[in-house]
Image 1: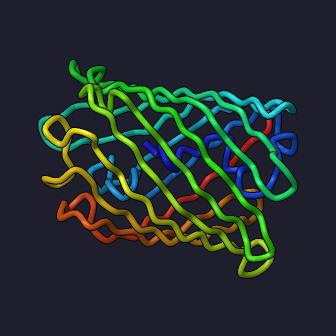
Image 2: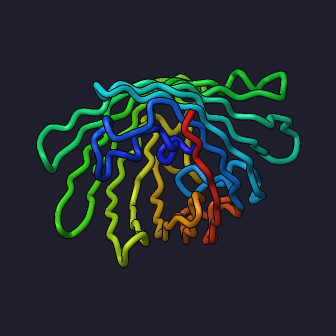
Length: 234
């Protein structure tokens, strides 16, 4: 679940108002590992992803996003399919707010649909001469179908190091409100750190990221994630 990174049309939160976005677009992405807040959703293997998005001039947007997944041995789930809708508000010339709701679904195994869950989010963006700063929040009241509250808080900053070349640094913390129902490496929460470089060339977007968590899982240790994507206006 690129939930935190689910490339909702809202990547525009960093700088531009929604009116600058294409009305309808499709994106295809190939990544060396599909990580959700530093935790691999593909058992440390590559993933193919795609999205279809609509963005209106009034800031409303909706879309769908899909990715191949692999939760490891004994689990045959192979596809995640998510839908989402929200609205972007340009509060003033520097501050933007993106708020919405998403629903994540899983497929491929007889128990896959038991993982389905909803999530609400609010993302604040601040643009200055020093770059773009984000303060983002996600909350689910039925995380992975375990009837448990779960929230994620993220602080991120993006700077342009040269024309067309950006570096984004982020820190986020995922927290379960009942570790007896859902725990992270035996505890209620964990931290995730990520540094990524982003650029574009001949219509393709490239991303190289270094990330880590403070958990001991082999699917959440230090890793480099590479991806290339292309967006098409429809």
